[in-house]
Amino acid sequence: MAEFLVTRVADFSIASIDGQLLAAAQTDPGAFIDGAELMIDAAFQTAVNRLASALFRNGAGTIGMISSVANVSGTTYTVTLSNPDDAVQFEIGQTLVAVQFVDGSGTAPSDTAIVSAVNRNTGVLTVTSATNIASNWPATYYLAVQGDLPNSSNNNFQPTGSSGTNSLLKLAGLAAWLPLSGPPSSDSFFGVNRNLDVQRLAGVTFNGSSLTLEEALLQGTGRIALNGGRVDTGVCSYATYTALITSLGAKIQYIDERIGEIGVRGVQVNGANTVMSVFPDRNCPDGLIYCLEMDSWVLRSQNPAPHILNVA
Image (cartoon, rainbow, N blue to C red; front, side, top):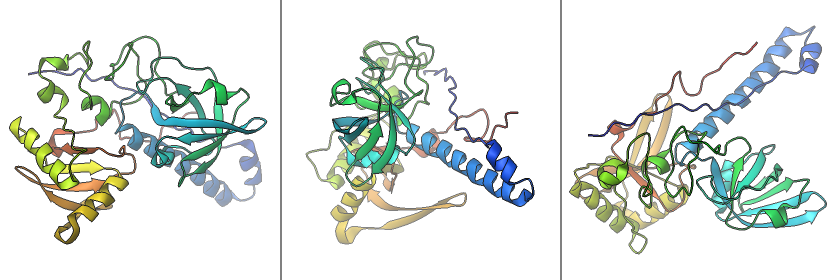
């Protein structure tokens, strides 16, 4: 038995209504309601996107790796992502910072850059920065939204591979609970050293990169079954999902699930001791399939996540 003492983290998206809207709507209350609704809906969607992204990550706030940075002219730069699909994590107007390691540790340049354009096909961000990020942001560094990187003191949890203790500001996603390379040697994950029983406390990992997707899923779920698990749901990126559909060919069987008012289409795949439904998610890192027993997972929150907090 192990008991995880899970701590809360806060994540906000701000909707503000300026004086110009108030003045313009003095003679038309309906215009004010329409304008306010637009701002609130946009902020709410931003909160949803940030939460959905964090569900697959390690809590450090990093959302993409730098491949290269080039100066276009003056204060305008282009940042090319190592994985173009990570462009879905970026939005115009974001203020970005860089850090050396995916866990938010290591060298963290003081430079900031504001996103002015996103090419979601090529994974190229156009940004403006008052400093020379072409020199200060090396390849293989990671990008994060300003304010999301960890603090220097540790009062939450330490992600896998961390070279130092960090007070992480984002929720602990699947990459934190199921670390790909296993827990660090000094693991203290919400008060638990998962090295005492890695497979039961930190999940079963399987490298199927040399196999077809069907073979990888079969052998991977076989390892899970060996350790007493019986998965029912798989989640992967859209690139992995389309590759799986291609691999299944004529054997493909689609499944439609409905959660509340949201309908999701997936495919059924035979596992070692189970039939698993695999679904795509744009926030899941490419090349990974998280195989889960869904009755073992829940998102804990103090109030509905997200919810609207009114501030006077």
